Length: 207
Image (tube, rainbow, N blue to C red; front, side, top):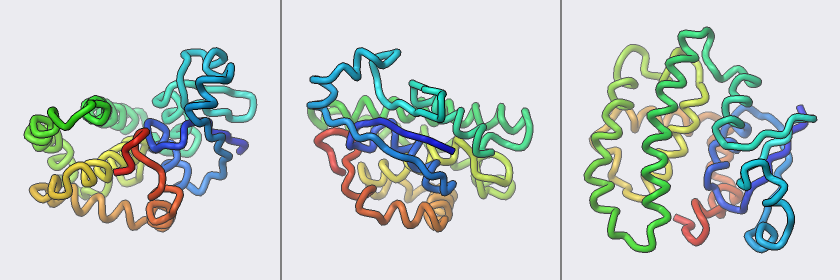
């Protein structure tokens, strides 16, 4: 499997792709594009939608984060065991993307004026995931195997604990879920690596 990921030297929207590949032990190369390179080169003009990340999988070139994620999930067997599970994974992932978009908007604000309101609304946003994980086995969001949606939720929860360390105190199932998934050998190694710890969430925000 010849994979190359092209993105900026931040976690940003590509981090969930990195996490998925790292956990699955999939080898990939990464081309790091600084903002200076992005502004000065012809790369932006060559991108179909004028954005990063880019994934090159052999002779296939993909743009758009979620298209890349779904492609890799299908390729790596992370999209459920059947169509029913795939539909439920899509449902959970869409809900995660809703929260992610709110989080990204907050991160790019010039000051902290929106943080209080965001954190006040956060428990309501987290309750559906807590409910999902507190029922049945509760090991993963869907079925008995890690999926596309789990990777998205794990990295989002990690970043929320940076934003507000006590944000999961009222959610024991989410706490247990995050601890369990972060203990997966490949994820544990990656999350404790300098590559992960030294890479800012977005430009100018290491934490």
